[in-house]
Image 1 (cartoon, rainbow, N blue to C red):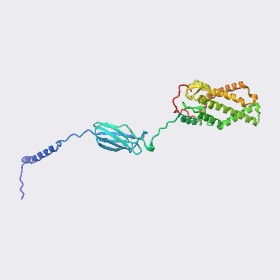
Image 2 (image 1 turned 45 degrees about the vertical axis):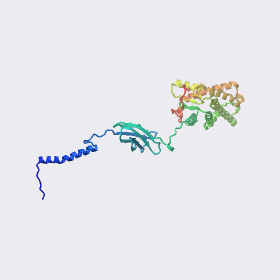
Image 3 (image 1 turned 120 degrees about the vertical axis):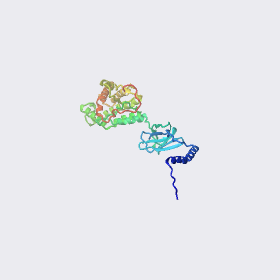
Length: 359
């Protein structure tokens, strides 16, 4: 039989306290022996955050890169997301080593120092390609630059037909080598339009009865054609290749294109006696002046005896050649560019800065 003993509330409370007292004493002794705090402590505020962006060396974002952050002997690993970004949380204060790597790229290591609770945003980390992905910087030589600019000049044609190779539209072109000067002259002489122009000039001379010593038959036309082409060849080779190579001068006309009308006109007219040397400086245009006199003198050799007048004819032809050169330069400065669709225009050259002066 079970006997229930009744106990009043006040007595039950006292009794319960007496029963729990030994247990509380034992618990307190146990906690003291284990060194545990008897009350909760505030959480640590030392956690830091590290963020950054991984790029491919050319400014492009690099997703999927492996980011290892080592702090106080512990390493956290993250993978950069689709925007090349990474975020590493819960890092302790102090120094941390960050190593970023990806397949096909050289790894990068960076050291950062974090403070308590700091949210550090790193500078973008560039990974450089390795092996077959290496970036190679190529620096063009002066000769290579001149070759490319000369190739562009070979496409300069008035109305898209008539060759206009001896005009420079680049603000500061690279100097031509002797071989490039010869190439420019030879290409001008062998252009089909040059043969056609020579034929038209010979036909006009025959129609006007010029150089009557050659007659007005087919043979006379052939002689006029040969003389015209010889004039063109001698003038081009002397003024465009031989003398420019000897005196190291540029045989081309430098288009100005800016400034007042008078300044541009003066620039054009002066070009028959002032040119730019291969060193970039303004010089007396020995190539053009001697080319005009040389061409006029040589022409006396193959023209009919009745049309040869010695020194007087040479001087006259040289003066005419100079006058035509000035007129042609004015046309190049003000008229021809509007009818040359393939000219480079205002394209900037990569050659070194020019010397002071208009040419």
